[in-house]
Length: 68
Image (cartoon, rainbow, N blue to C red; front, side, top):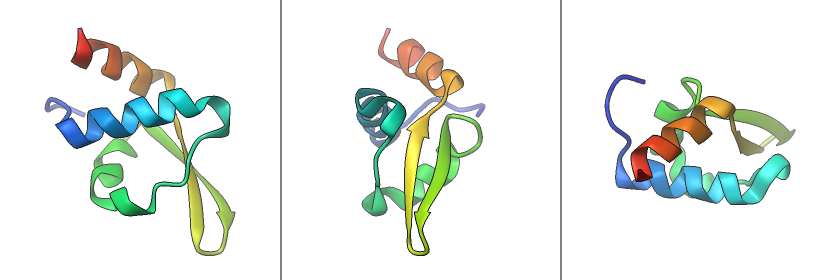
């Protein structure tokens, strides 16, 4: 991802980092997740209509850089 993280993306990455390995279901944030799925989060299907998202190492590093 070439551009800086938006406030919404930073909030989402913080939520995912706090959720740890288990991840979170984030149905309200599809627009931000579209960009973050380019390497910052992983999607895990848990049901036919629900996905759980987990932060990647790249996402954690980007979050650290954004809040530094």
